Image (cartoon, rainbow, N blue to C red; front, side, top):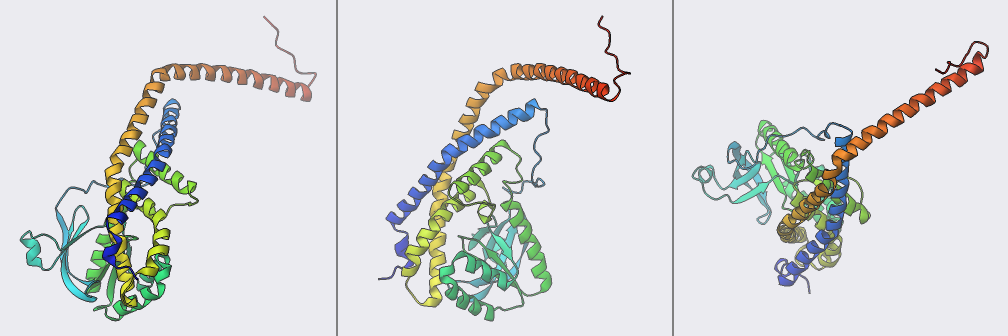
Length: 357
């Protein structure tokens, strides 16, 4: 018998997902400790060498979180997945890059609760149907035929020629259509800016903690045979850790669940993506619960290293200077003897050794 959406997230499935989160974070903890020690020693070495602090990989952004200021708003056509049709809705973009969706402009103006909210962190902005189709193909090859037919149905019904796609590996996608090219361009610039700022917030943070975290994530993936920077690194620490868990989980879930998803072919993709989003919510919730303990463990490790190394730092620096002077004097003497030997070889009759006093 096939499986439907509601059957997948019963108590047993939720416990399984939470358990997998615990396994990944338990494996990450010793990696974080080693990376913390390495980063601390590198920092001490930089201080000893009087080097400038590491430059941020990206330009620092102005902090945009925590504000309700509206930076843009307007009506946009959105494809409503469960109704399988396009509908005009009123969208509001906050300065924190939270995208809110309302039924009408009046609902937004009177302060009604948004019908839906999308924080752009972790999303990728696409402006071509072909690019969106390719992302679906790469993500869920088992659903390629279904994805194609479903997308063609959406494409044939696009109300205008100006579309944008917000794609996320595990969250619901947004398909938007604009009445004019100017509207499409304006919103594309806004959405692209929000996606860039939120997705790179960790890489733009030149801090000890950020370097330790990113190095630990890289080490965990390499330990499991996966290499390179990819979309999993988009977003905040909790989002990146959630992506890491899902990267391990998805091959198992795909092989065990997709063949048993029941319903018409045209709805199987929709059912699977809804299941995936619900599972990601459980994973992200558990990661958020555990993350502070991971941060606290790293801070305690750093404090232990500070207590062990800092008291001897001035003595290490003095010894380093003394050793440097000795090596420099030894090198000068070595160069003098080397010069004398070369001079004798070229002009033996003209070279005299300085008289000893």
